Amino acid sequence: MRFEKISFTRFVSDFASAAPVGMTAQSLYDALRLPERATKHSAGYDFFAPFPISLAPGEFMTVPTGIRAILDDDKFLAIYPRSGLGFKYRLQLFNTVGIIDADYAQSDNEGHIFVKIMNSSPEGKTLEIKQGEAFCQGIIQQYFLVDGDNASNTRNGGLGSTT
Image (cartoon, rainbow, N blue to C red; front, top):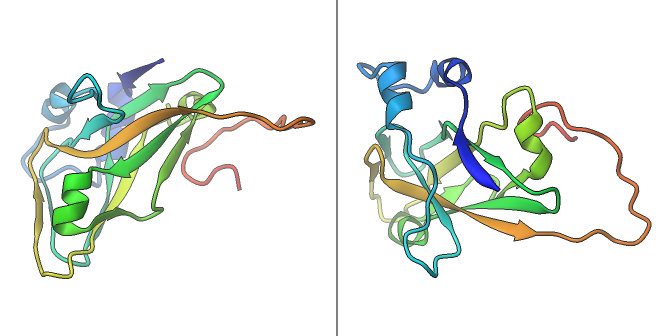
């Protein structure tokens, strides 16, 4: 299991609408950091902001991370907001928890992980995340199958592609 950057070609395509003015695709791509744990007992792998993010209360955005996860067949990656940002700003994921299946990495979009976040601050605080700062975390988990499971479809697509 490992994390990788998506290809530069995919990156340019996916970041076209999200990239801040004045930042080149190459500089953003070069600055991408692979997820990592902060301490030896951390469960979560921190995902780092690919560019500066500023969200007023009630605002939301989809963050293209530039990252994909290569997972064993019986594992998935659960994405959560960082607890400190949730506590201070009530940072939330739109889908509450993101689930990245093992076969997502083989999709046409190279398994590019997107995280849709919202500043739900009831205190009127603007959320400011610097480029390279951790903003969410992924926890790799194992899952099990029930007797008689016969799922045989294959994925080819991104967000919501299995419905």
